[in-house]
Every structure is written in structure tokens, then in C-alpha cells.
Image (cartoon, rainbow, N blue to C red; front, side, top):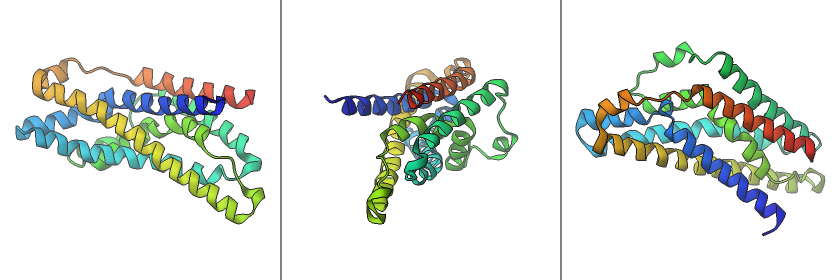
Length: 222
């Protein structure tokens, strides 16, 4: 495998790993799917709850990635954009570490509106920012010097890549969260969810800082 292919493989593994990590975090919503299944006493209710949770998470990823898909076409600023994105991830991680409280607006969203809730929580946690460095590493270099048609082609490729990255990440996220939700619903029950709630806020913030720092180091080393 070529060096470029190996680098791309590691980036995709990072996208999948971050999705699995988001999925096991109860803050991303899988306990709500368990609650839906137990309230209606139906596994179908659990599965139905996972759909809006996934949709909201996917939209939150795209809300972060799509603007950068357009910005990265500015070839003369490409390294600066990547460095700026890394610094943004680090800054957000530091903010979450120093002030882990959730915005009060999240408490005003009823849990029944799972799609909106999932979107807002993912944005508030900086979930999209965590996969941003991986996405930028997969983007095609700009073709602006090859004319407008070439530049438009590159932009379209980057937009398609943003959608693919968001889909792969969300699929991994909902697979991990769905498995935990099913185990809790089928075998462990709601008491297990209440007693075994684990807080990943500090780990989440540190992860953001580490992802941003590694991406910045790679950018400066190029």
C-alpha cells in the first residue's frame, strides 16, 4: 500500500473510531432509545428512537463539515485553514474542559423531539469538530489553478467526501449506541442504565484537545 493510501486508511479508521466513541457516550442519547423501548414495551420503539437520533447527529456533522468543504478550495489558504481548524478543535476542547456544563437551552428541548435534541447535543459537544481534522486530511487538493471547471470539480468532490465522512461516522455511532441500547433493553433493564451512567465529559474534552493537537502537529510538519 502506498504512503497516501496508508494515511487515508488511518484517517478512515479515526472517523469510525470517533463514531464508536460517540455512540457509547450516553450523552449522545442511547439511554433515550432504551426508555422509549421500555415505555412502549416494544423493541420496535427502541429502533424507531434510534432513527431521529442518527438523523440529528448526521445533520450536526454536516453543519460543521460542509462550510470547510467550500473553504478548503482556496488553495493559497489551505494550510492556514487546516491549522485554524485544528486550533478551533483545541480551543473548544479547552472550553469544555474548563466549563463542562451544558448550555441551558438544551434543557428546553423536550426529549420527545429526538432529532432536534440529537442535533443540538452534538453541536454543543463539538462532535463535528472531532472529525473535522480527519475530514480535512481526506480532502482533495484544490484545482483553482486549473480553471473554474477544475475548481468546481474539486469542490463537488469535497462536498461528496463531507457527506461520506458524516455517513460513515454516524453509522458507527448509531451502531455502537444501538448495541448498548439493545443490551440494556433486552437484558439489563433501566436500573442498569441509571446505576451505570458514566460521565465522559472530561475524557471528551481531552479527546478534542488531543485530536486538534495531533492535526496541528501534522500540519506544521508538512
